[in-house]
Structure formats: C-alpha cells, structure tokens
Image 1 (cartoon, protein in one colour):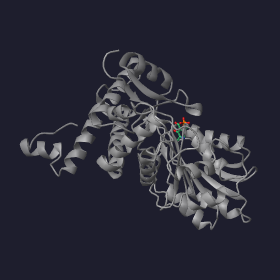
Image 2 (cartoon, protein in one colour):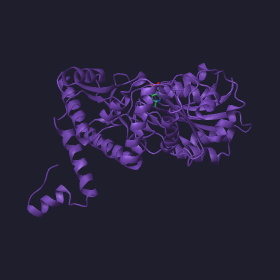
Image 3 (cartoon, helix red, strand yellow):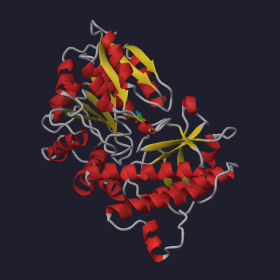
Image 4 (cartoon, protein in one colour):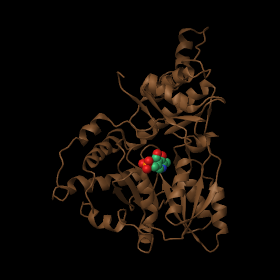
Amino acid sequence: MAGRHFLFVPGPTNVPDRVTRAMMVAMEDHRSSKFPELTLPLFRDLKKVFKTAEGQVFIFPSAGTGAWEASLCNTLSPGDKVLASRFGQFSHLWIDLAQRLGLDVQILEEEWGTGVKPDKVESVLRADKSHQIKAVLAVQNETATGVTSDIEAVRKAMDAAGHPAMLYVDGVSSIASIEFQMDEWRVDLAVAGSQKGLMLPAGLGFVCASPRALAAYKTAELKRVYFDFGDMMKANATGYFPYTPALPMLYGLREALIMLLEEEKLQHVFERHHVLASGVRAAVKAWGLQLCATEPQWYSDTVTAIVVPPGFNGADVIDAAFRRYNLSLGAGLSQVAGKVFRIGHLGDLNDLMVLGAIAGAEMAMRDIGIEIQLGSGVAAAQAHFRSTIMAKEKKPTDQEHFAQLHPEGVLND
Ligand code: PLP
C-alpha cells in the first residue's frame, strides 16, 4: 500500500529514521580497545533514564520477558514468596514466569481496567509478620488494558507496613515515556524493553538493580546462566559483555538516548505523551465509547484500550484498519480479547500522527457498523492539541479569539 504504514500498536513503536540509520553499521570487534567508548557512556546514560545514581543497569540481548526473568532469577531463591497484583495480560505473564521459575506467588486479583491497590499491598504485608514475602511485583503500565499504577504509592504502602520486601517494577511500556524514579521511589529492580519508549526495535531487555538488589544477588539461589548479573558486572565494568552483544542495537540506543536525554529531554517527552494520550481520550469521549481503564486514576499516557460496543468484535476494527487504511491498532488480549482495541501512543509520535490513527480508527469502526460520527474524535483531539499549544504559547484559545471577532457567535468545537 502506498504511503507510510501507521504503526499504533503499543510496541514495537516507530523507530525514528535517524535511529535506523545509526544502526546501519558494519560489524566490528566487540573486544577491541575502542568498544568501551560506545558502551560505557550507554551504561552512564541509561541510569539517567531510570533516574538512579546508585543503581546498576544491565543490557541483555533479549525481549522484555528476558529482563523479567533476569530480575527474578538473580535475586530470589526457589520457593521464595512474592506478592503480585494481576489485572491484565502482562501482570499475568510476569506472575506465570515467576511461578514457572519456582517462586511461591501470592496473587492479588484485581479487576481488569484497574491496577495495583497500595492499601491491599499494605495490609498483606502487615499481616506477614515473619517477613516471608521477599518481593512485591508491580506492573507500572499494564499495556493490555491501558492502566498505569502509582508506584510511589506502592512504595509508601510498603514503608507504612514496615516490611523489608524488595520492590520489582515492570516499566516495559512506561520507562522513558512517563515518570519513573528508581531512587526516589526506592525501586529495587526495574525492567524495561527497547521496543517502546526507547524507540528501538525489539531485542534489548534492560534491568536496573538497586544496591540492595545487588546484595540479594550474592545469596539468591535460583539458577541462571545467560542472565547472570555477576558475569555481566565483571565484563561491563570495563565496557564489555560476557557474550557477543547486539551491536547495531547498541548504536541505535546511543542515538535514541541522544534524542531523549539531550535533545527533547525526558520531562518534555513525558509531557508530550500526556498531551497525545489526552487527545486520544478526548476522541474516545467524543465517540461516546468507554475506556477499559475504569477511572481517571488508572489512565495510561502510553496506551489506550477502547471498549467496543456490545455485539461488535474489536478484532474486526483492527482488521479493517489494517487492510483498508494501513493502520495497525493493538488487539485485545486474553480476558479482553475481542472486547477492546488499543491505540498505542508512545515513542516517536506527534499530534498529526495521532490524528491519523484516530481518523483511521473512526473509519474502521464505521466500516464494521459501529455508530460513531465520522470526524468527531478527530475534531475533539484537534481541539485538545490546539488548546494545549495555545496555553503553552500564552495565546488566546480558539473560543476566546472567535468571541473577540464575533461577540454574538458561538464556536462549536
Ligand atoms: N511487560 C509489559 C508491560 C509489556 O507491555 C510487555 C510487552 O508488550 C512485556 C512485559 C513483555 O515484553 P516482550 O514482549 O518484549 O517480552
């Protein structure tokens, strides 16, 4: 199909052309004396992404799933008890992985569309007088339902309970896209992936470990080889890896970090994601549809899951969008399969790109018979984007401007 593909799944996200170009490198010797000139600054700069001074970042050639595994198998022992909330496919998969590693997972089942409930975490930890629970697992952004949980509040709940468990956070679809503070929130293990906010292809899994997590590594007895922190630490100290690294990805990471940290800067990246997400939510409201996230406190700034009306299948919307309009929307997974479709709005995106996705979603919904007004979502998002820009530039809103010109008139958007 002519023209650019509109990639609006919540990962993999669009890879900026300059990142793609940065990855087009000839292979080189990863044991050369020059190689650390690439890698040591990467380790240094990734710490800025996790917002940590003392933590150590590991780069594994893996999917986010590998980073999940690395976080657990390096710091826990067989049979250790961990507490995890389940409220979507990714929180489910992390629990499943923990169970298959031989951990004893106490699960807090939450309604899909909500997230981690700090008060429940606190009461379970308070009841655990003998401190059997070694870890609390929290997915910061549940990509399946478009739900963001308050990790700072989880940390406060753990403190309020006076419990020494370590805090593990899945930030695969949040880190580098929305606020994440490793040190401030005293997160012990944070997990990220390359294919979302970091604007790279899938293929790198990141784990950031606190000094406490690194101390736990010394006594943890779960088996690990490929993901062993110790092997990594030994090699990384001088800028090398214990095995052949994914070289082009490291060059791409260099470029992406320049864009995020030095050019746009993380704070602006977070604000941009908030504006884009709010525009999508304005569109959904204008369509008269519901979000999967049940309340504003859960709204995600990186992905929105939209509930299709009864009698319709979200998969049909996605298929029409893909076949007719060259637009990829995210599927509903597991419990919400067919019930939702998702718009991913993270990574290298701007207002007009998001308007394209909203326009395509409108057409696809109408194609399968969902009664929404064409252009309604686009107009609502346009109005939101413009009012944000006007406010930032301290210019009158459209309404104010129009009222000056036509005191008797009304502007209908
Ligand atoms: N955690 C979250 C929140 C995710 O969204 C994903 C993937 O989308 C993963 C973990 C797993 O990452 P991967 O598919 O790279 O293994």
